[in-house]
Length: 303
Ligand code: NAD
Image (cartoon, rainbow, N blue to C red; front, side, top):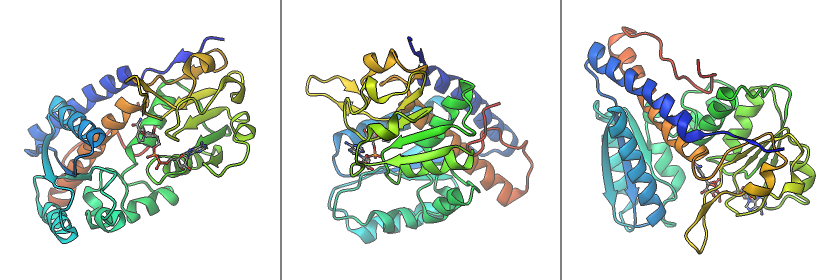
């Protein structure tokens, strides 16, 4: 079997065309340009690359973005004050704090300072609670992007066995909740899981977000499974790879996402979608629902 490649770059482009139209509509009908504030703390090289990509993607669809940079040793109070200020800024509809933070910062305190209406990453406790009860306000961007890839490819989720490798707050756990919301049977594995393969081999849909190159080998994958590789790893020779042995697993899986060009571009695309949702809700809150209902909501199928 030679797996079908699920091309996140191409799907991301299609969705961004729709987002660009949404931004134009908001600007034309409500005189509101969606705005995203991005906060970057410290000098982590990978974080800087991610932030630069997000800022460029905003410009590409007409979202106004502001990058606010702080040194590693910025005092916690200064950071929280800056977030509170942005919470009040009517030109900024979304606020994103690039993770990971330098170790001495209290990530929870920082994330929970973001107004729930501007929490476009979906990491605030309130939004996490919404995810748990199936009432999503902002869907965390990476799992949201994975759902879009599956929906666009016509891959059903209901009743399927889904194994998720990785249980982080930003990928694995919200991914599991979204899958449960869509009536999948979900197993979540992590680094303490004994005999990972006994779970992965059961998966109709295998989602891997561990940050370990070649963690998933062909013999761990059920023939015909759908494999979603969220991992991003830079090898010593400079190559970017996921967590899955791509060439080997391609021969067993029915569908697979590549790295790069799979989940990564979709994560940024869903951030743009969430920012436009935030701007739309701002307009609805402040002036009443004068616009058409928004098209890219929660983890609903792309229509
Ligand atoms: P994390 O370090 O916070 O969590 C990793 C998870 O994987 C943990 O639950 C850990 O227990 C588990 N894990 C680690 N080694 C394992 C092993 N050998 N077997 C089973 N489980 C194991 O990482 P994260 O932030 O969730 O990111 C995971 C990966 O996804 C990283 O490579 C990251 O770069 C990538 N990522 C990609 C995107 C994207 O847009 N494509 C977005 C976020 C993260």
